[in-house]
Length: 286
Image 1 (spheres, rainbow, N blue to C red):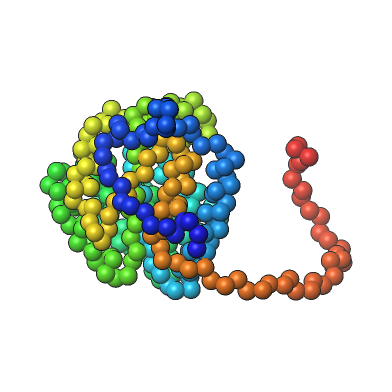
Image 2: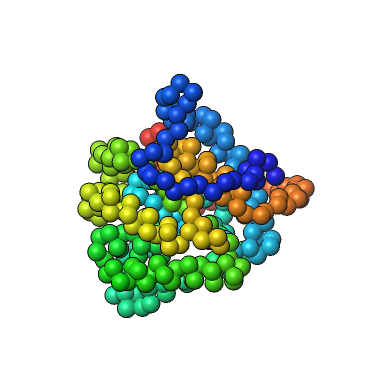
C-alpha cells in the first residue's frame, strides 16, 4: 500500500502556544514549497482514489468530522481531499444556520440525516460539535444545553461506530499570530473577503474562551471508539499532506486490480449534414 498506510501515534492535545517543532539549529522549519507539495499531493490523490474504489466495492461507510479554530484551514484541507475523487462517493456537508423549524427539533436531528450510507464518505465541514464550540462560546445555546450535548455525544458516536460507520474526527489548530495574519489577508483579498463573516470578527476576541471550550470537548468526547486527532496548521501545505496521509492510515482499504481498458473504435468524425449556427464565446485570451 505504501507509506500512507503506516501506523500513526495519537497526538496529545497540548497547549496551542507550544506546537512548533524546532530544527537542529533551533529555528522554526520553513513553510513547505509548492513543488514538493504538489508532487506528494499527486501521490496521495492516487491513494484517495484507491480508497474510493474500495469504499464503493465494499459498501464501507466513512464519516470524517473537521472542526477547529477560524482560519485553521478546514476548507482548504477538504478541497485537497475531494478535488480528485467523485462527488457521488465523497459528499461534503456544510450546513447553514438552522431554520426555525430545525431549532425546534432535537439538536442532533438535522445532522443524522447526513450520516453516510453504504459506499459513501461524508465529510462534515463543521458538524454537530458546533454546540460544544461556537454555539457555546457565542451564547447561541445555554450552558445546560452544551453540558447535555457533551454527555450525550459519546453515546451517539458509539451507536454510529456500532452501526458500521468508520468515524474519524480532526481538530485543526492554528496559532494566534497566524490566525491574525490570515484574517488580515481576507480583508485585503477580494477573492477571500467572502470568508470573513461578522461571526469571525466577533469570535476573534474570544481566543481563550474557544480554547476552554475545545478542551472541555476533548475531555468529554475523546473516546477509544471516536478519538480526536489534532493537526497543527500554521503551514497549510504540510498540514494537508499530514491529514490526508493520516486519514488513509485509518481506513483499511486495499487497492483493487485495475482492469485492462482499451478505447473502442470510433465512428466517423465528419459533420453530419448542415450544422446550426453556434454562439462562440469571445476569446480575449486567445
